[in-house]
Image 1 (tube, rainbow, N blue to C red):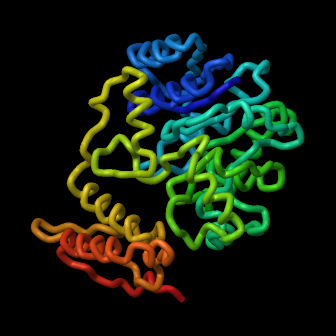
Image 2 (image 1 turned 180 degrees about the horizontal axis):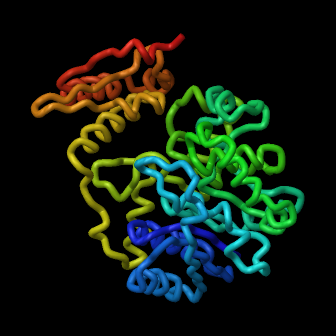
Length: 358
C-alpha cells in the first residue's frame, strides 16, 4: 500500500499524526509512505522515520524543485507545495502504479483495505464529493456542467499508470497556464477540470470534511443519507475547516487527533493558541456552527475588521444562513443560549446587504 503526502518543516507534526493513524489502523498491511517536499530538515526527516519504523513500515522522501510551479497561482494560506501531487508521475518510481494521496490535515480511523482494493483501472482516480459540490458558482467559474460534479482533493485514490499513459501532468500545466484566473482553489480546481470525466466517485466516508457536519445548502439532498452515515463513523476524517491543533477550535472528532498525537509520541507543544485576531474570528465561526448556521466562504475573508478597541463582525443576512431546523426544534433552549453567547462575544453586529440571499 503506497501512501503519498506533501509536507514541509511546518507540517511535520500533523504529518506524523496522520502516519500514526494509518499504521495503527492498518497493522497487517505493508505500507510505504512517500513524502513529497520542497525542503524538510534532516532532523524532521528523522522524526517521521521514527514514527514509521515504530510500526515496521517504510518511508521515502522526494525533494521537489518548486521552479516547476513558477506560474502557479497561490494565496496567503496556500503554498506551492499543494501542487506537488500534480507531478507524482514524474517523481515516484515507475514501479508505483497506484497510490493513496492524503492531505496532512487528515486522520485515518479504520482500515484502508476496502478503499485500496477499489478497482480504478479504467479511471484516473477515485474521488470523494466536496462539501460544496452543489455550489453553482464553482461550475460557472470552471466552465463545465454541474452534472460532472466537484470533488475534494484532500483524499485521492490515484491510478498512476493511467496518469502516465495519458500524460496528465502535461494536461494539468496546460490548464494552469491557460486559465490561471479560474483557479480559486488552486490544484483542486486543476484536478477537477482535467479529471471531470475520467474519475470514479467513492463513498463519502473516505473523506469526511468539516462541512459535512453542518447543514449546508451546497451539499445536495441527494447525499443526505450517505452523509449522515459517513459523519457517524468516518473512515478518513478531513479537518478541512477548523484545525484540531489550535486550542480555540473545536472541530468534530478533535479528540481523534489528540489520541493519535499522544500515540505518536510527537511534540505536544504543537497544540497552541491562535493569534487574537484569528481567535475572535474562530470563536465567531464556532458559535455559528453550534447554532447550525453557516457563512458563505466569501464572507469569511471579510469577517473581521479590527480597531484598537472595537471588533466589527460583518454578518451575512440571516436569510442566507442555512439553519438545521430539526436541531433547533429539538433543543430550542440550547439554541437560544448560543444566541446570547454570540451576542456577548460580539461588540458590534452589522448586517451587510451584499450577502443577502436573492
